[in-house]
Length: 52
Figure (cartoon, one colour):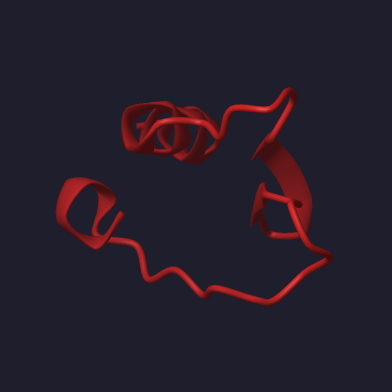
């Protein structure tokens, strides 16, 4: 995130197997199946919310 969007990210512990990415408290991507989102999918979701 820092390299692509110049955004600091904070990793917070959650329940086992959970995965969510939020921007200003709004979830922009989450684990929707057994697979986790790719790095590219996460960066794209955050960039979209930030208008980049």
